[in-house]
Length: 271
Image (cartoon, rainbow, N blue to C red; front, side, top):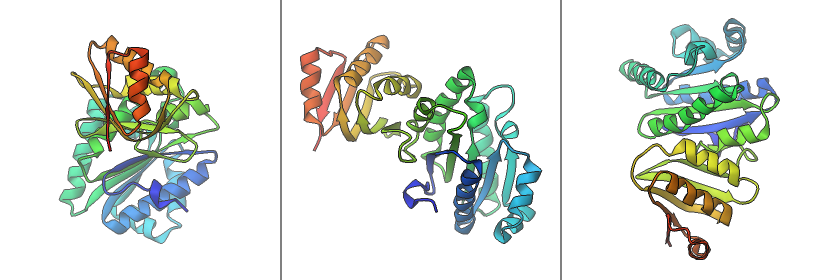
């Protein structure tokens, strides 16, 4: 069974990693069945043959009825995201149309479970999709839509999965020690940043920072940060000719910034 902590609410975004596609599908079914019970329209996005998946789902009475009425859908990865590269703006526009249609038909929201593995095997496509993961999280924050993204450990290395998982507000245990995602007036950073993941943090920072002006990072949920990640913040800010404001309860971060002379980083100690 899926942990309640890893099931998004009415508006949410989480990442699951798996070793067996059947286990991901089983978890996705649970997530989508919960959506049906809440009054949502639901969609499952799969790299498998759609007719084969639909036939399996017809064995579940609630899903069989929802498939028949169109409240539940199964579609391919290519049909959902396109086969020639992801157009982020077009994708978000299509989400708006599908969400509005669901609401107009009397549903309370829309939820999607998607296996994104085929979209991130190629490094070039992965870069674009990782940026999309961040932008779609921003999109979901203000709408009655939730999404689960799945990635196959047998086809992706652990660092790749960590780079993708960290851009979600929540992910399976063991996929990432930290998360960096949109918040009110900046980014939210939680978890732990140490010698093992500072490089992934630098990559996440590059992919997640899309706004002009000084960058505010709400890191009240950050439990540890070492000097390497503070250096990444400074270098990132310097490369964009701006400042980073790090709001955290970790008072030692302020002392480290002073000792290292990181003029582009300002730590505001909270609580």
